[in-house]
Image (tube, rainbow, N blue to C red):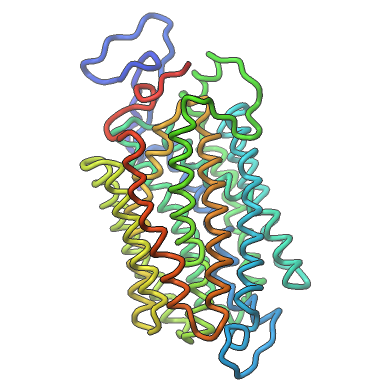
Length: 444
């Protein structure tokens, strides 16, 4: 991807930049905003790729994890077919998800110590611990060690979106967020494809240990990522304690509450839908590895289409309707994927990635545009925490229903469809299309 020219947009904080804006006073803070194609944005995209690659290893190799630590028989339950029961798998995955709650203080620290430093710390630590989990002697050891790296990678993923949003103007922001989301998807997809084609050789240990490859990208990320000027300006203008628990002022708590509920509902669907899909494909529907790899590759194409379409909708129609459309689409596609046949699984998975990709640019932009710079990372941390809780609840509920025989279809209906109704909450927050964060929420 060629690097586009950076745009240096000078303006006083709170005053929109553009050809008709009032020239800033001498000595006023100047924001140097970048194109979505700039190296500053591509650096955080690489960080997102690394986070996706590291986090998705346990999902891609879940079938092998169950085989390695479980027992098989010829019964009809999930434990008989997969090696471990849905309750045990759901509980383990729920613990790994819940570990991401620790990402809240990590993202909050970025509001005090800077985006760049915390991004580098979290992506490095998360990948290193993930590599170490490959030598775990048992299932619960694996859960515990992998869970230690999860909050760091979750924080890195959230901070990548924050940095991309802060480095760009309203014209480029949805595109930058879409690119960061695509980076995460590329990292996750690479893990899934490699495991699908080489599972007999790598096993779950080899798949997880491959996190050493994105770890080698950290020096490149360090050279490319820069501290956003928005943070530098906000840091110079304020004096407040370190928001280690994600402190957000009372003025913005209503917005945050709405976004927290939305994040919970989306993750309630995507958590089990994405986490159980490879176990369901390999251990229950016995999809050949080549077909699984083709399914993931096809989803990569629809994901790209979804990101482009979602970016266009978010910039032309609005963040709120685009988010609602994507959320409803996720529920329908995920329910189809688990309805019972191989073809439904493939089609539902591909369409689910499409719907999630439509959702991502709108929600990513909305979360970062609704809050001022001094609490933006903390607000993203709360959004992340809500997603962690939603995914954990979804994993346990979905696994428990699916446990009794082949009841994945019922588990999907019970878990996914009710959550889609909460898409109406998008209209409880302001529309941010075409507006800068400084206009929506001037610093106090």
